[in-house]
Amino acid sequence: MDRVEKVGQLMKDKVAMKLYGTLEILESKMDTLINELEGNLIKSITGTDFYCNAFSSILKPK
Image (cartoon, rainbow, N blue to C red; front, side, top):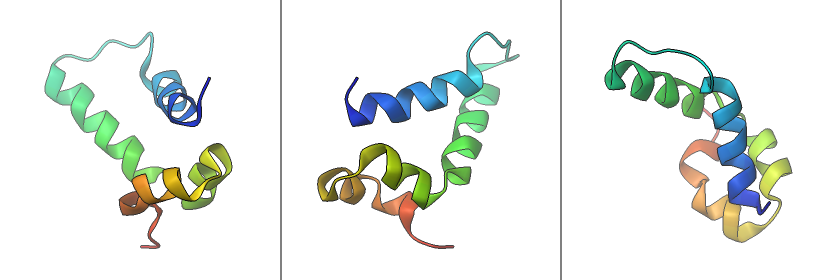
């Protein structure tokens, strides 16, 4: 599994096997999960500048 797939798997683990009333509710849950990702977690999963730059919008400290 490549690094981006690991991030996808992490997200899938959080939402799989749960029922969401609408697609909008699922999208909102995904947005929340993305916003809650910590920079250090993403860095540990991805580990390269290329991927860190791709995820730079969520790696920036709040």
